[in-house]
Length: 294
Image (cartoon, rainbow, N blue to C red):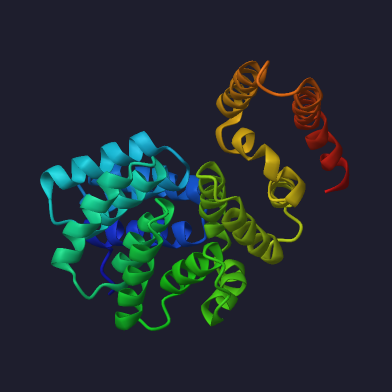
């Protein structure tokens, strides 16, 4: 005669069911299963961790962080909660906090390649490219085929304009892991904000090559192509510092004309004034014209 499943067996089954749903990204269904499990065992750390992961995956970052902190308050060595805490901090752009968590994890698990990959991605997000590559290479020493480590190296080489063999892996990795596209698109925007428009364009083009039908990427590449066009070089201060750059250039130009007035021959001063006027008109008109062709 078969025995009826006990409470532990039922709880184990709910855990496995939730994990299977999470692997297929069926978060709403996973949340329902976890609710049933937590109703039976409200202090089950693994179920709580899976619930925090659902919050993280759905963008509920405050709730995810609260949950992992509660788990770690009871079990400071819970590997899953510690690792998830690092990911949540990255998603909240709290890179120092993420780095501190990952350093502590690597101290306890010095041969865990995924941790090197996570740390490398944090350094990549902060544009610390040399350290990102060094960490990724250390991760590859422990796991030679790590897709995350290979991606970090590929991205760093693209940003730096070194189209080495590793850069060829990026498109293939993105096709295998399309969920990384958002992270890399954010990196493109970070590079652009830092003024590295060419590095941003190289990475954006590679992303577009792997996702050619993404309208956001198409427009992002076009915008970066306009920014890096040779005809936009005289407008670099405006591109780099926005309105602050435009105001600075305007004030500098007006002060320069005032200082030159009376010190240059009238004909030469008139030519300089016309050049300044032409530059001002060019800065207003040319970006709109370029937008029609690029």
